[in-house]
Every structure is written in C-alpha cells, then in structure tokens.
Image (tube, rainbow, N blue to C red):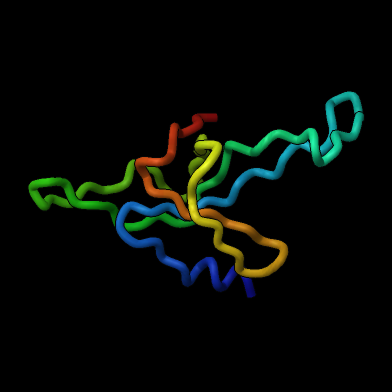
Length: 103
C-alpha cells in the first residue's frame, strides 16, 4: 500500500521527495554500531520530483535532479512524510539539496 501512496504523491513546484539511506549498523570488521553512536544519514535517493519553479521573470525553471539520483542532504531541514511505520520519506526544496552524488 505504501508503494502505491508514493506513486500517487506528486511534489509541487521545486519540492523533491527523498528516501534517506539506511545508516550503517555494522563495520567492515563485523562490529555492531550502537544506535546512539550512529551518525545522521546525509545521503538519500530521489523518489519523486516536482515540475520546477518560476524565476523573477516568470519563466519556468526545470529541476536539476531526476528520479533515481543520489543526493547529499543538509543535517537539518525537510518535512518528514510517513506512509506506514516502515517507510519514512522527506520533502525538501531543490535549493536545500547540497549536491548530486555521481557514482
């Protein structure tokens, strides 16, 4: 059901729906990292993109990211969106996203 809800959610203007990456719970050596010591996850994947914004002349400015892009996020900000207890997404403005991660 959550997958259908995400497909129906269309961000407006320059907003972007992002699913944050899961935090690392275990080191390469196999040591489990406690929840209190895990850092905030600052990377995510773009799930949905709005149509874009308008500049001061009223011209349409398309977004620079597309669905599937990996992005670097600020530590704070965004609006949390929950469809069920297992899935958590965040809405950010395009100007809040720090960078696109090329892999």
